[in-house]
Image (tube, rainbow, N blue to C red; front, side):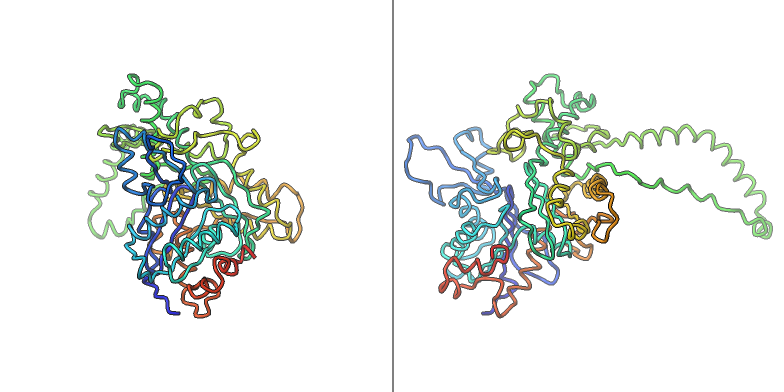
Length: 493
């Protein structure tokens, strides 16, 4: 069976987003399609006992336009992947169908595009994999199909087979230790830490900025409107790349090299008078510029930036760099009352649950470093050193906020020194991985597109394998049915 690279489709399905692209090239490209993984359904005047069909759901740009009009309250928004599994396959099919046939312009009757998909399942499920396989063969008529575990795709993008993948999402962070390409399911941790809480926290900090408050006229708004406005500003600051978590140990810039005057050369050239006059001018200007330099250093220390937000110019200070604090210290947001603000206040937040500060069974949210350390501690002692050699921080936020990996690395140091033992299996250091620079299209995207990159690499290999050992062809599906995908998914065997 011959499958052409130009027809291959990659679909990355996360808890809150779907990304896709058509075609594999020598220079692997970033996804061409990106949409929120949510569907809308209009309320009917009468109660109906029949379950909604695929075509009843509004998806993609039509949904965004429907939610933007005043009567959007009659639309119920659902997120079928938000819980880390597929909670409604009809809604999931509506999303995938929209991607394949609307965005990528495929035709069901003559579909020559093999598909590789990643799912947001915390633990691979045979039922979910089989049902997904059935949808793509029977409803979308694909010629070949493969499923890749999301954490594996992320680690492959970093050119590694062993490590700890920390996938930071909006509400949850999935932590997955991997050893030699094998998922350690018993060590996986799902932490209720995400970037939504960080955005609410930054909006709370911006409220104390008098320049922002005066510029936006916040004193005339009620608390709900105030917080909604500041949430939009916080989101703009993050997406614009103006947030940088502080890192320690940064070297100070070297002093300017004043140089050494070559006296002999000056005499030979007859420029003695010019050099003396130049020296006198420098001494006179030094006193005058000292105050200016002090002021410049003061302004630099304040780290102010001016942004244009909704038609107004605002000056924001260093408080923007505190965006990531709730990830490392969730206790900071306790008592701030951020849970009272509905998710609909957030850009694209319709249908999401309110932010929460508790895990299941009423437990408080643990810091990210504790969750990562706990996940590695569940692994066998002799492989922990290999896991710590591949700490990979990914998630959509890493496209805009650089330095989260370094911040987490410094906070994880106590976990490799706690035992006090000096043995061959004792971890010596923690190494942070990133997407290599030689992927030119991904240089400016941080690690945010790691799933798509890793999936593209795998698809380029498996769909060129004539033995079809790592994907399910239509002929094999006809013989084996949906169960055939299980044989092609090592994590389920």
